[in-house]
Length: 220
Ligand code: CDP
Image (cartoon, rainbow, N blue to C red; front, side, top):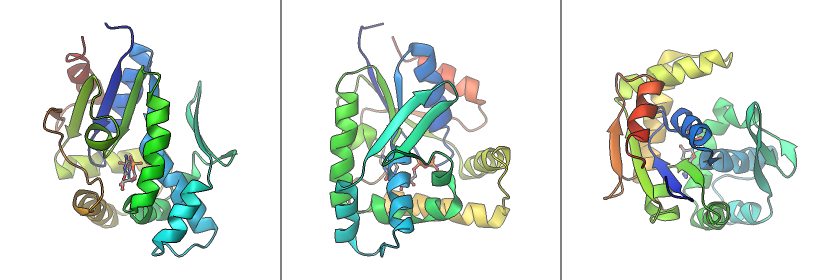
């Protein structure tokens, strides 16, 4: 394997992106960067400050005045928002359902782009999100687009939420995922897209281990 590698992974909710990226980072000794956690942290701060999420100018100002840090401990990635540990809080349903306001704001994305590129600069990273292969790291050594059928993605997300002790209403969950997919795919700035030269992996019916093996088989 080359001395420094950059791996970019995109895909919709429940495609296995986060689980696969974490395992690959560990196996190959790379830094794992969850860019969704950054948008989630900003969303949490905007909500806590009572900012009107429709007001893009306010969101951009907030992004410029916020410190987001991903630190890595034995138990996994810890998300620090202005120095506070928000790892758990950013997974709450109302944060999930409001992320699109921040994700569609051009100035917010510009700010995240700078932060994310700075992290990736040193190399040896696995960065995952929605626009990593297309906008943030289009020259990454390896680019993957992970996907799975809608039903499978809903099933995985339900299992994940249940494992984290959250109550799940099945119809609400599929509605939320459908809505988020639509917003991620149709927003004007940096929508979720398959990069032309990305390796597309459909993991429907695969276990996480099988998905990891499939991704790793492409990495020399
Ligand atoms: O893990 P999950 O699929 O639930 O989502 P996430 O990766 O935590 O991202 C949450 C939301 O942040 C996504 O639905 C996107 O709207 C947004 N996001 C984005 O716009 N760009 C990224 N690079 C990462 C996330």
